Image (cartoon, rainbow, N blue to C red):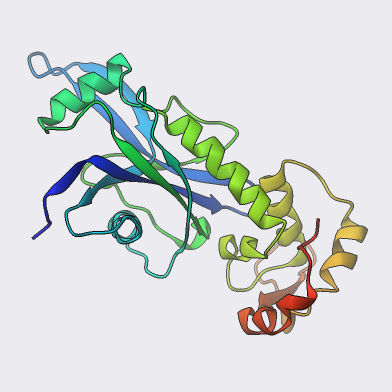
Length: 246
């Protein structure tokens, strides 16, 4: 049985995914229905999150929430910021939503932000508790509830910084990938373009990118060579690296 919630402490998870072209974020639709005539009062989207339960630390709460939504285990997860503004929940729509839930939630709730990285091409996300769950490109976002746009933007800032320090981007790729897919990933996250020749020259210095004796299949263009990321090699050689790509 789930424990009682801590009313003024929650976690919000920014779930990033890459579809070989764009960086996406997983959002949950929030729709308030008029109980009298069943009309839609408003509809928007939220990050996935929930209150921390009594006896549960925020890290465990984030893992629980992610597993509940995606069904996945061992997802890359990082805490990046705490959001404690007293104005977080005071917009009219948010107050209406909170009251509709019938929960005793105070106006001031502190939330701990996490971001996670998954390969969205290999994950099937089903509707969560009859609510619509969808991927959106980070550059084409719908209206977001609460302060979730601020949380998302802060998560993206942290992802970009971390991406330049460690090869965490491979968490967003399939186990086997091409060098072109790596370049598209970094361009999508950093919002820039790289010269293909220089980019591949830099990649060739990364000993933890292991070439396979395999090529792409079922593609219309000339099949490209496949690679894997070796965490073991990276951990053994990480002291020799002072940043990834940038």
